[in-house]
Image (cartoon, rainbow, N blue to C red; front, side, top):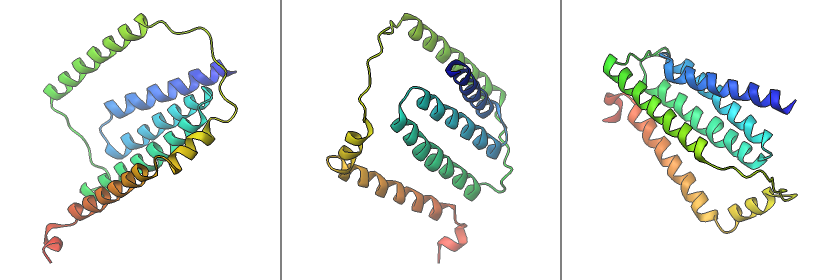
Length: 166
């Protein structure tokens, strides 16, 4: 059962990623990115990494993807903006993708993975949450203020030029 679920989630991630890379319609590409990110969160759940799965959902699916769609909708002339890369850009992207895939395959093939799985602690999320709210509270809040400033700046820059001068 776990193997079938793994292969289904892996297929979802790969199909979504291919759709993002080969797509031309920006909003549809964002939806395909959503599918890929949800598949990655599902893979984290299968690996018993619940905190990382929750962080994946909250940060990437809930935050970054919404911000991407927000930026596209604010800056594009319409929600149906189409990308048209030149032939040279497509060739460079294909060569870079093949090179990256080759390096990744070599790295995975030359790595020795341990065969013994160590038992995980019963409650691994509580110490992490305690550290975020105690020791790392200031950097956590500083990052949230930085993201707020970026969103306000993006909204300001997306306004029409004649309304900014007033």
